[in-house]
Length: 396
Length: 135
Image (cartoon, rainbow over all chains, first blue to last red; front, top):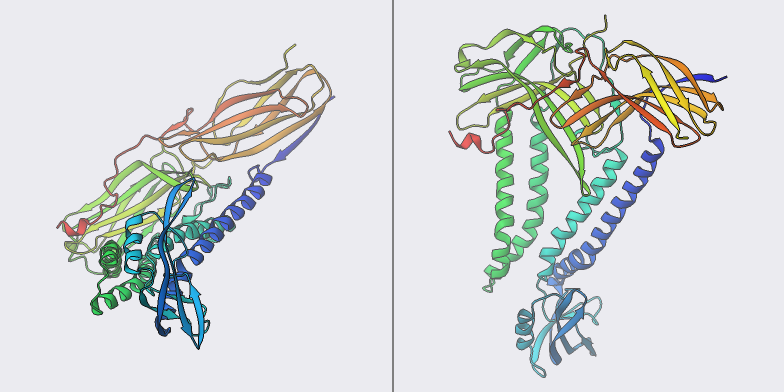
């Protein structure tokens, strides 16, 4: 005879899979970050800091012992380096150095290296700069190596990906950034919650802070190179390569600064307060929506309140995640061409009975929201959304 | 002889909260040790898969053939739906502990007898970059 038992599962399966996924995520993020940081330090930051530090190094005369373009052949092709050996004296002791500058890598492009080598013929007397702390260390050029301009941004991408994966795996990223692929289902409440004022998904302050941090970070890095560039122009030896190279980076920096002002101006926009007679309506419900503006709507040319239902599907794309959206319901509840004449109002909202209730899983979501759009000429528009939970039809 | 598992259910279009009763039947070469019937849903489509087993019934048996009756009460949500990006499908799944035999019966859980169809509509409210400069 068969014995019968029943299990209720309050959560998804794959707990073991989740733990191993977390370990893999942490390991992947850690390796990505560590490799990025290591290469960033060795080939970017270390040469950059040494170059900046060498401004205090004393200048001494030296004699070029050998000068040639070194070539290095490997599976990726041939790379070239400036191989110059020179002799100098410091504190009465003779030294020999083979460091042209602070670059730690060879690179493609022979002609630029050949031009440097041509400036340092064997037997010629030149100037070099000697480290006062360690006189055995000397260079012929204190300029920031050009490889630094590529290495730091390139390695930073790896570091950002690595740290994002680690934070995402640990669940320390903001919810809307979360890369969570574990199967988490949050069941929609079956209880009505009554009259409530709806909260906007964004106050605008977060955007100001985000854009300001991004602008400071970006312009902070760019300014290091910009100071170097200004100095080169002021000294009468402009670095035209660096000038051309920096133009797009500076333009992005300016755009980010403008974005701060744009987001600050948007803070001054009037806000709409929305109050639903039932803040978690069920499918088929008719509810009252009261709206009122916090400031006069005199500058607003066109105001629209709409109800939207949307599918949101998150999926992996390589090592990143992407979320696609598809709107399945869009109902314009209010449209005013002269909103200045009307500061508040009430309207009836009907949730379609043949549609889908809110659904919240780790990767797939059905979301409902009230959207407020206002056009303001020559000013940031009003764009606010107020998420609502649409319940399933109550069981009779 | 092939291993056979079968779920006998009168109707597969069901209402949320409905009481569901049916039978499972099995005919196997070896004793299954345990037969498991699970009620659950899973998503498919553009997004990575989400799934959940809402309830599970187990029968411990060494009989190579037989039948048992089962009863479930369906939860109030989620509904079966078929959208542009996501579909949510409910199913009853019968499996054995010893062996690979399995049988799945798709069911529809919806107040309208069929999966909710969500078709894409144009959204004019999507953000237009630099729109404030055009006026």
